[in-house]
Length: 116
Length: 111
Image (cartoon, rainbow over all chains, first blue to last red; front, side, top):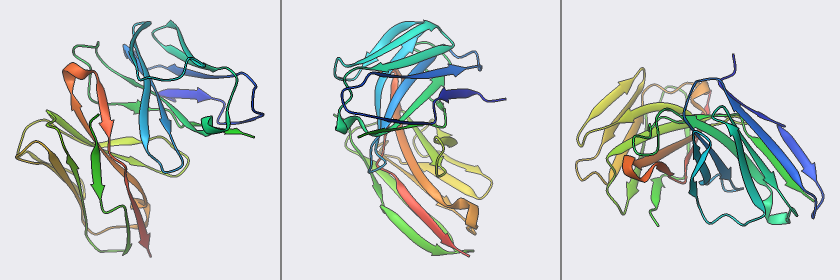
């Protein structure tokens, strides 16, 4: 039973293309996140959603648009991909709402995006 | 913004040795967490700490919440090859709604 699953695992694409990454969690959590891990392994939060509502948007370019159709899903769409977008993108979830956000993050296994 | 610095950046040790790593912040946190990331996988939570001075163990792992609330420490005793990976600390203030991650300590264990 995969708790947080994201697809695809690997994504290789050309500059300028548009691509999406999907994430689903079966833990019943209220909050979902997208994190970006760069080549130096630094993990940085991009977005968080609580029960389909955007809570955190960490000055991510407008080309990145998260969408949460329900609280178990948080997808990430990226327009006009750039070389600098190459990274590993992690979806995560946690229990609780924004004010009582649980500290315990459950991560997916990541999507390695390579922009050529 | 808040920054967490982890030390050392990388460690190469022999199987059976003990390991110590730490994490320092310019800001106070009310929760400290330690995660481990295996190659090709997402981080997995190891230990969560909620109170200044708290010492918590999980098997061979022991972590401490620093008294100043600006640092935390992780020790691994009698390391084994499967301890290889990147160890991340994370600090959280629950009203902020997000964890801030350190820059990671990469551990290599030689059999």
